[in-house]
Every structure is written in C-alpha cells, then in structure tokens.
Amino acid sequence: MQLLRRGHTGPAVAEIQAALAGLGLLTGPPPHAEYDDATEQAVRVFQQRRGLSVDGIVGPETYRAITAARFRLGDRLLSLSPGRLYVGDDVGALQDRLLELGFDAGRVDGVFGERTEAALRSFQREYGLLPDGSCGPATLRALRQLGRLVVGGRPQQLRESEALHRSGSSLAGKIVVVDPGHGGADRGATGHGLEEAAVAEDLAARFEGRLQASGVRTLLTRGPDSCPTDAERADLANNAGADLLVSLHCDRASSAEPNGVAAYHFGTGTGTTSTVGEQLAGLVQREVVSRTDLLDCKVHAKTWELLRLTRMPAVRLELGHLTSPRDAARLSDPAFLDTVAEALLVAVQRLYLPPDLDPPTGVLRLVDLASR
View 1: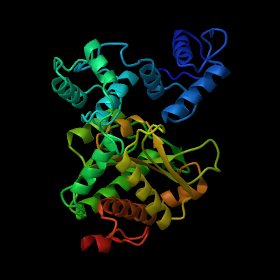
View 2 (view 1 turned 60 degrees about the vertical axis):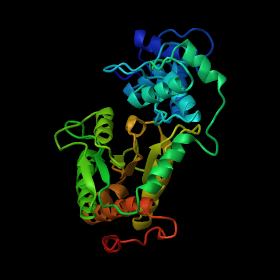
View 3 (view 1 turned 135 degrees about the horizontal axis):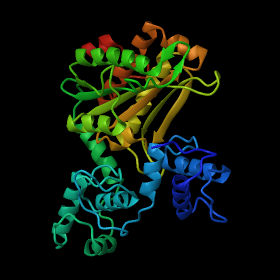
C-alpha cells in the first residue's frame, strides 16, 4: 500500500480518519480527507499505545493495526478461515478469555489460527456447547458468564516459563532461527558506506557459526538476494518448531547524534507480553552493552509483526545507528562483530541456565560454553 503521511488527501486518508475517530483519537468536526496535523498526532498516539514505531506515518503495519482495532468481540462470527485468517482485537479478546479459563489459545496475537480454534473447541466441549470451533452468540454468552479459572499470573506467561524450565540447560539440539534484517533490493538503513542488510548478514553468519559449534540447529530466514516479509519469516520459524528467534538490525536517524544499541521483545505495554522474550532481550542487551562501548538504549516492548506472530520467544536487536560516525566505525570492524556474536551466544546460553549456575553479565566466554 501507499504510505500515508501529512499532506496526503483522498479516500484512503478519509478511511483512516474514520477509524481513528471511532477509536476516540480524533475529535471535533468531521475530518475532510486531508492528512493534517491532528490526523498525524492521532496516528502517533495510536502507534504509541499499540507498541508500533511512532513516526506518524500510516504504513502497512500501522494500517493493519488500525483495521484490527475496529473490531470488538461479538461484532462478527469468528471461525478458522484457511487462506484468509480473521485478524482483529476481537480475536485477541477471545484468545485472552480462553487463556484465563485455562484453554491454551497460544499467544494473544489477534490472529484466529489453528491453536485458537483448538482451544475454542475444547472450551465448547467442556461446557456442553456444539464444538464447531466458531465463536457465535451461544459461545459468547458462556465465555462472558464464567469467571477466571487460572490464577497466580497470566496463563501464557506461565506456560512460556514452564516450557523454558523443562527444556534443560544444554544448547545442544535446540533450534534457533537467525533473522538478518531486510535483504535483496531492500538494503535498510545506510550510512558511512555501510548498509544495514550487509551488516546484518555478516553478523548473522558469525552468530550462526557459533551456535552450530555449540550443537544448536540453526535456520536463516533469508539469503543475500531475498527479502521475505515479516509474516513469512515468522511462518518459517513457526513451521520449524524453533525454540528462539533472534532478529538482527541496525538503526538510523535524521541526524548524526543518536547512537547506541536497543533490544525489543513482544509486548503491548498493557500486560500482554512474552515473558521469556523479555528475559532474552534483557540478556542480549546487557551482554552487548557490557562487552562493547555502545550506548545502552535499553529494552522495549513492541508489537511489530515478527515479534507478535512468532510462537516462540523472539528478540530484535538494533545494533547501533549507521548514521552515527561513532557507531558506524564499530560496525565496520570485524573484531567488533565477533564480540557481538559472542555476546549473543552467551545471552542465549544464559537464558537456559538455572539461577544458581547463571554467571554475572559479561564474564561468560566461548571457552566456558564449550565445557557445558
């Protein structure tokens, strides 16, 4: 789709304004199909609330999120529709309700997939309803009448933590998907003679080699000449039954001043989050910061598609700004990328170590991992 930004006009702008008005983010007189200051501010507020990149521009991801936000549970009949899955806040509300009642609908991602249908059928069978996998009026009434059965924490977060505990401390046999950002004709951020796609490929190769030497089964989401969508990258990881996904990127800014490294995990900012993903992002961030001199730009929750659609814990690393002379100089140094690759491997290993065996940040080395 065409990016919509300030100054644009037309039916597509009117559609976005109507949706934002329905969400209570645009008030006052009816908008006139012009992407004005008020529309941009409303888009920024929406993006901030949804854990999206806050740029005031309606691109594909923001458009999908605005469309999804228009649906409330009960607005439409929900069922599994292969080829064109139902997506929306109503699906997310259904998933959250099923989880509260003890039925494993997976992550609250707002996508009505097979796992959501299976959880819905289980609920219907247990409560004497026709187990047709469709959320219609009778099922809605039952969902609303029942109280929460799972206590002591959010169910999916508990399941993630328990799965991590049961998987054991060894890396051997685990499956890690390494995702070099962008690719093909999409070179991503550029600056000081560097391209984000190329830096990501280089770091991915170094990280992948270290993972394989530790007995990890690895998959790359792309080759040098391809650029899958985020949904396609998530599908690859999901179909492989991966244990983790690590996505590698660099950042950019409109000036040379911003610099530093940040890590991201799935989270809405309103309680729905990937607990293990957040833990992994924290480990990655701390290990990279402790082993390099990059500015610590902290860990953040986002609802970006790749983080939201993966069924395993996932982290996205933004390793420096290519528009910063300071960061670019480091990213052009092979020894620096080796250091980051080691930091990533150590972070993955630390994720699986029990608390009594987990060393302090920045001290575990590859030679130590070889003995585990």
